[in-house]
Image (cartoon, rainbow, N blue to C red; front, side, top):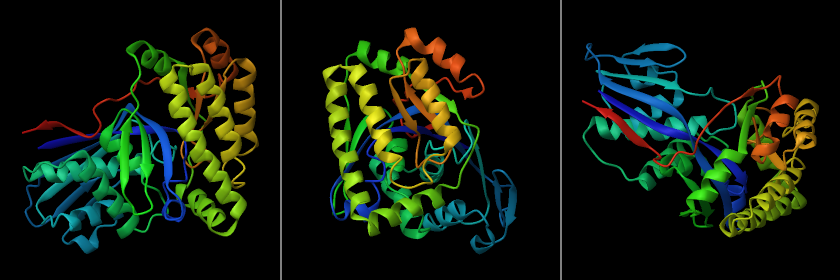
Amino acid sequence: MIVSSAPFRVSFAGGGSDIASYYRRQAGAVLSCAIAKYSFVIVHNYFNENKYHLKYTRTELADTLEEIAHPLLREALRMHRVEPGIEVASVADIPSGTGLGSSSSFSVALINALYAHRSRFASKDQLAEEACKLEIDILKEPIGKQDQYAAAHGGLNFIEFNSNGGVNVQPVVLSSEKMAELESNILLFFTGSQRDTRSVLSTQVQAMETDEDKFRTVERMVQLAYEMRDILMSGDLGAFGEALHRGWMMKRSLTSKITNSAIDEFYEAARAAGAIGGKLAGAGGGGFLVLYCPRDRQAKVRQALSELKEIEFRFDWSGARIAFAQ
């Protein structure tokens, strides 16, 4: 039996520049961190050697790959040439459609589990590259590359996307005191709504491809990602929170699907209560509200957002890993 895990991520700046329609024209960059909330995949030999037994939000029992309904499972098993006689189950700490990169965390954990099931090792870059191939090239999902690399590597990273398709992952190194302060000052609140990431991202991609002003907005978001990396390394966390707010103002201008009146009200209430800055995690449209707020103001922010569910978390430093093998 193999138990594999990969963390979810919180993106701070540069989202959208990891999509090919942007980085093929101009190099992209994002600043993000992995959090200690995980997608887990269990792989086990199945008693019936002629069946694929798959368990997620539903259960599938299939004779052939073509019969498998779950696209990521079907194509990952095909990619790794897995024969029947295998059982795959998945669980997660946080549901999908909430802006924390859950589908890519699942893909990375699944691919790592399939390698381990055959007693093979795959590097973190290899896991990320294969997850990108699975989701973007094979399944044609309108997504970028940041989630796969964040899930594979873990930690706090500045990730660059080159016009030739290459990806550079650069860990952001802070003192232990500053890292602990940053971690304790980031709050996550679930807005109560899950959304179709494909719809939001497809609209954003179309905007970048057809509207030069929108492309230039993403360009400024990339510049801000570099600025925020440097701000973090200087140790000025207050300036980091202010930059997070500027980035959200840019991002919300890309399409009307990124935010709505309810989300705007939550965000303004948090700012009025003491949060310096924030954004919606992921593509937007719902999911988690990410806030930067000093500890002495957090009680007021929690009171202002009392109707929302807060998720406590810590940074993840391991990335994708095999939690159990027997």
